[in-house]
Each structure stands twice: as C-alpha cells, then as structure tokens.
Length: 228
Image (cartoon, rainbow, N blue to C red; front, side, top):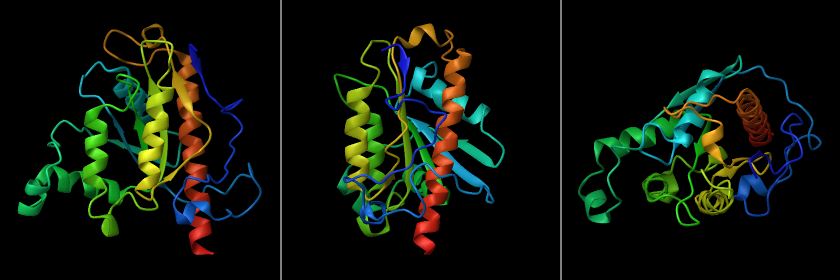
C-alpha cells in the first residue's frame, strides 16, 4: 500500500462508536453517523510523533498537520525527547518536570494527533513510554476521555498498520476516545517526503488536512454527547 486510508474516502467524515472505546465512547453519539456538526468553537490539538529523529517521516506528518491546519483549529507540536523512561521509583520520588509539562500539554488540549512509526511490527518504545507516563495515575490521567486521531508512515509497504492497531488498543485502555475512522496509513514513505522529512506530496497533505478536520468533528460530537 503506497498511500491510503482504510476508509474509502477521507472526504466523507464518518463518526461511529467503537466497541473497544472507553465508557463515554461506547455510548451512542448524538446525530446520525456521518452527519456534520457546527464548527462554532476553536479546537486546540496537541500533536506529537513517536520518533526522535528530526527528519522522521512521522514528525513530518505532524509538521504538515500544523502547517495546514484549517481555520478554527490550532495544532501545538510537542517533542517526546526529554521524557525519561518510566520508572515508578522516579515517579514516587516526584514526577520529572518534563513529564509534568507533557501531561499539562495533553490536559490543555481538546484533542490529540499522534503519528507513529512501526518498529518490528509494533509501537516504538519512545511512544509507548510517553503513554505509560501520561496514563498514571489513572484517575487523573489527561488521556481519559481525550479524543485522539492516529496516523503513521513507514518506508516499507506495511504502512504502520500493525503499530497503529497496537497504539489504538493501548490508548483505548487508558480511557481515551480514539477516532475509529478515518485512518491514514502511508507506505513507501520516501517517495512522499523530502530528505529533511518534510511532506511534499500535495495529495497526501490534503489527506492530512481531512484527517484533522475529521478529528474536529469527532471532538465536537463527543463534547455534545458529554453535555447532553
């Protein structure tokens, strides 16, 4: 798969519940599947990639999302480089400042946009580590009920499908509301990015915009449901 979405078209925003989602995500959402909601609020999205390499394809996806964010959406890009390996001894002694800042950024966001590489058929350690920190303690985790969209790029033809499935499973367990569709998977990524890791493919840049717009729809729909 060179470039594609598991859903037939990103242009049709489809919102549905997932049987693996948290309690608030399992309930029936307001309105019919695929019906638009009014964009009357500014949405803040925090985006990050599960890679530390500057020219990473996945960091490039996040940069492209921030550069092309539609009106009414702001995307703050954060880096996972300063987050230490999770260690309960360290947590018990006092949360590192970088972890506190990471959690505060997640808590302040209306939604999260995550780009994951795929290493050995799975999630990169740096990304899983960040989710492990953010998930604790569970009662006050900034991931609870947080809308999340996932995308990913890989140099091979697997298109991060396995990593995205693993990340979705882990995020759902934390209580996050992971957007089930659409999904954005990019294979043979070198053909779509510059040597600096910038996304150059105009069709794919449009797909990123459409994914972000779908995340806004998902976020607002969940907000309406919570207020009902």
